[in-house]
Amino acid sequence: MSLQGKRILLGICGGIAVYRAVELMRLLMKQGAEVRCVMTKSAQEFVTPLTFEALSGEKVHHDLFDLTEEHGMGHIQLVRWADAVVLAPVTSNLLAKISHGIADDLLTTLMLACEKPVLIAPAMNTSMWLADATQTNIKILEGRGYTVVEPVSGELACGEQGAGRLAEPEVIAEALLPLLTAQTLKGQHWVINAGPTVESWDVVRTLSNRATGTLGVMLANAAAIAGANVILVAGVGCPKSMAIINRIDVESAAQMLQACKDAAKAVDVFVGTAAVSDFRFKDTSATKIKRQGIQDMQVEMVANPDIIADIAHMAERPKMVVAFAAESENHLEYAKEKLKVKGVDAIVANDVSNMGNHLASGWWVTASAEAELRSMPKDKFAEVLLQYIDGNPSRV
Image (cartoon, rainbow, N blue to C red; front, side, top):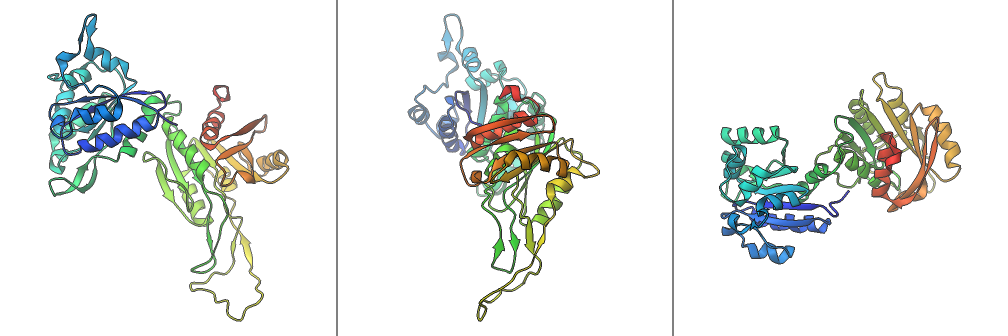
């Protein structure tokens, strides 16, 4: 998922966090968006329009009366040009104005005329953020459909500690993606597990595998962007996931099983992408096992639980359970066998060579159909899988 080709209007308000808006603008552009900026008068006291113009290559708008055109008001055309509007940083003053329909400068006039998706990222002193008036204004804007990326806690410019710092530009950019994506999964609850599990032998040595969890995280991100409420149960070393995802980090197969069972009760979809260790050590040590004097050693292993089968046979089973099966040969044959044995609704059969690779390929297998998924980058592969899981492969 990216912002490639999207047109973003960035509204910049006064406050010390203005300098972070420069980072945000560059990040949006790096992701392929075309960005135009509107600055309030107070914002220009902190950073000059020239800074944004030099970095964006676009004129920065700040004067309401410079935008009058022959066949219509320029501020109307500017907001209609955009696919979405981002206000960052947002001050308490601007929150009050736009929540009550005050239009006394270019930015507030734009907002009154705006019919596009809007994301706001406030930044202010903790007391101002927690004030009843501010919280009431936030609720008003949320009621109108605005998306709010709340400020985070930390040290503020005034020297105080508390909530009020502008959210990281990466978090703001991530929150923008659902506003520009069809919400085909809105209202659905998904649980996805991803990555390897790690089984301890002693305090130093472990048993694991080559899985990275990349595809599982990408699938979780794609589902969340499409509107699903997503819980990601992540094994050791899984990449960073989007902030809008509820992430549970685990280590062993037993921990992953418990987390998945707790999260997956009666959800819409469970997807088991994790590479779970088939076995664990029967005996473990709380101290390091010494090698000294040992030439040969036999280690006894015991089977780990079959997480996907346990989920498929839960009393409050998810409506759809999708398994992954990494094989080195006879992919379709093994997938069809596992489909029956594990009691799942679908299996994504793939080759073990996909582990650690930036490409993915495989087969989508159900009781009534199978489809080959040709090699493609993992982020695209995740989007294709999303359509199959949602029952709309025609959109692929």
